[in-house]
Length: 238
Length: 256
Image (cartoon, rainbow over all chains, first blue to last red; front, side, top):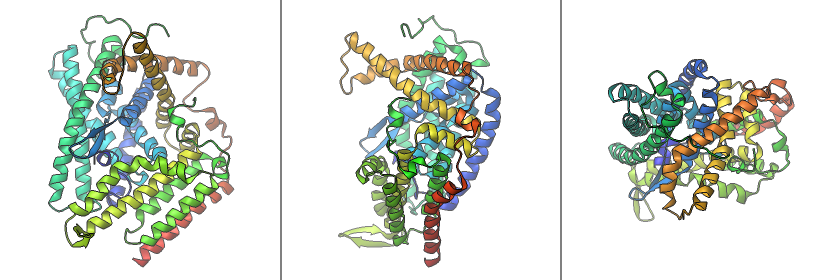
């Protein structure tokens, strides 16, 4: 069920609703392209590609959730928002979804608008709003950054999942009647668990990057570097 | 890009479908999928027609049915959801194999199964006949914003970097006495995920700078040279499949 919530495949949501969300997604993507173009410099271009590749890779790792008989995977919206900002971040997630739909059949091509709305727009926007708010409130320490990354990742996963519930209510293949509440509950709980895993990976990755290359973290650029103990540069012999 | 993860789905061969320019194949695949999705779910015969079309393209592309079916297992998770629908659905109910199921749910399950499977098969055929590099060129020629094709290009390139870097780090752990088994290697992986990201970034940055110094401006040479773009004949040849599918969909819409 998770797979479907994240990557809606053809036939799950009816045509008119899919078309409406395709228009919404297209408009939002156009805005992101316009705003993102100003940000994409020599440092951000390879970073955007790597973030997209990273998201692509982690979405391949599926967690089986035995109680519900479903599997879930990570999303990456919060990681993208932290490292490359909301505009380019949303584009990264959208590119991942498009390539997955075109060549892997993961998520239907006709449902791409719905998937982009949930994952790229709702997921990244929810994460970024939280990031901006939390970074202002929390202390400028590695712990503060870790908490920010964890919470924003967790919330963005649940928000994206609830986007699917809304879309299903608007135009699901089968009218579920009162069962829609059950569907919403199952999806919310499942994604709370996935969100914890997502939060841990996001926090771990962003913390390492912030300690060694704080210049690469978009969310920290406006503020000073995170106070941290020096960490030996990773890499070594190549 | 070596024979890595991203080329897994490419079926190296030479056929009329392989030789078609990528933008034509992408457009045909998207149009075909839209026709399938627009078909009313009660028109069972129409989906048989689409399956015949997919089989015909696979035959022309010299892709074996077994190859396609094995890779279409990706849709299994949502098939499970489809099987739950007849029991979850509200409204009119009927008896099936002694179980009470919802008629609407049954149609919904069929809808997901048929449209989902056809969509997966269509995209697998595209992937089987188009390299990832050509796919980006095709998207660029279809007027996809350069920012997006650039991100997609780097994504596919860096996937190889990520996988290679992860392999190197695993070998490094092994040679320092780590003994990764099934679940226990997760811990080593989790603590190393940040380092993996940074190492891949630094390697990727060098790749990017090397590309820049060789004249990379954000687009691949094949695109701005305008070579091998699709001819009218190729567009017409590829449009036969979505045209037939659109005809089937229109007939189904009129009949139901």
